[in-house]
Image (cartoon, rainbow, N blue to C red; front, side, top):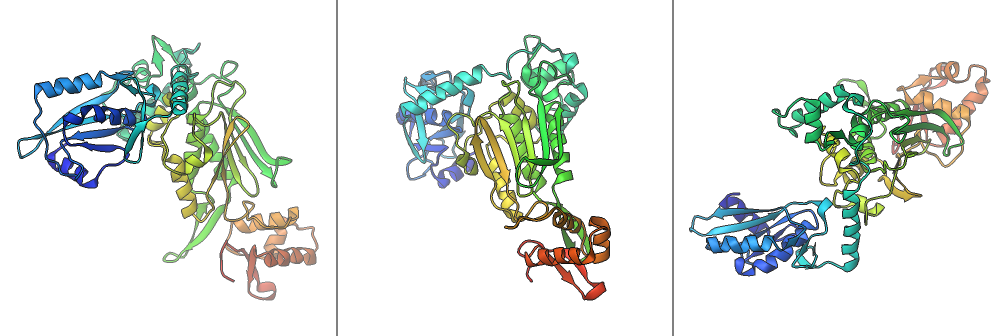
Length: 467
């Protein structure tokens, strides 16, 4: 950090992650704020900046640094606090104490008390919050994912491991000089310890799952209608998490309709997926990273209905997190940080808990309602709601199977004449009956027509399209 960096930070003012102290005479109060930062997303205390945001600095001696070291030793457990001295042109210095986030070690205490941060205020943490964080820490140290596996390196997909290493290098999330040896790379990611691969390694790189790892499963279904009574396609797949995510995206590309539009300058049709693929990917990554793998019968489930898409994963939200929190700023606390680290290295996920907010933003920008987040019966769901009917649009009336087929036939083209539709959808149906079906769909505002008589063509009416 340079003097100009410090002055810019001072001008921005204090925040949830930044606090100013005029001098190290306030070192003890600064320690309380560092404790609060450690119990959240991290932060920094700048000594030598007054409450008026003037970076005047102070004299920093050996005795000062000894006092700082003494303060750092008063954290329990030992805290990851960095110390930086920033020289000013006046000859004084700004002393920066920077606390990194480390949710697995929370809660931290300072002088035997835990602190938290609300806005720009540091205060003693409520006992209920402190007890909850203690439970989270116990879980972090005894997770299913960091238990040793009975399998060996030979049971892993070494090609996928190398692909991950190269992807991490390309994403700038791995030093290119890191050894390409499988064992070394697994240890670098924390997936191998004491000569044994961990359960997390099997989840992300495994090749053999039955009978030991039945939970490495993906359930896929395209239901007919609005419930699970009938389905058009249903399958179950076992594989490692990266492979299952690819399978899920392929399934969705087959079963979600395309929305067509005309590119004005080139007069060509452009087909776009119903939901933004990046939003779907975010939801799937969250499902694989946050699910509870300790249940042998668990899985990630993808269900496409006529009026919605649901992605379910077994396991509850991390301690203290509620479904409504996923639509606003929240800490990123994956249930399986080792598994999440692999997705992060591949460039498929960020660290700061923005994934759920991002998928909400993407869906709204695409013209859809905000996705819903649910927690029911020990499982978490993301429900995507389209602006219209998936097969192809939602209406307040029940449609016959023939009428649904007409909509599906029109969903994949610009406009089609009656004879072509009849030949594809219902060649044995009387012409008058099929024309009545088309008229009914037009009254519902789902389709429209252009032209008269035998020269008329029918086409899908997009949501919010003017008459």
